[in-house]
Image: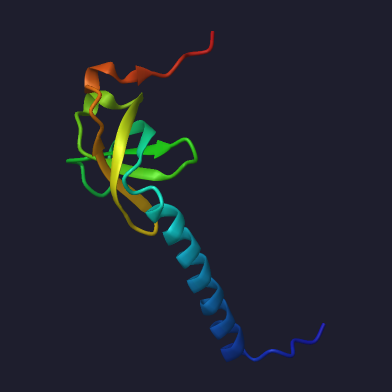
Length: 106
């Protein structure tokens, strides 16, 4: 099969497509700012051990301050800001001690 598209055109088209994709992703993340989401706390963040990292039900990364004892628990986090790859927030009003443990199948 003959390739009738030059390299510069391919590169430009790829960059345009990536820019559109990033904008859609940014809008999705920005729409979550101000909302309280249920987050499964994984443990310390890979980039900053002083904060926790977790994931929402739709697998979005959330970074928030909290004790390491929350790892493995579902906690409410209010999102304060967003980047293109992560959400940043704080524990919601509910006390950390009330965080739900995941049910274990037997």
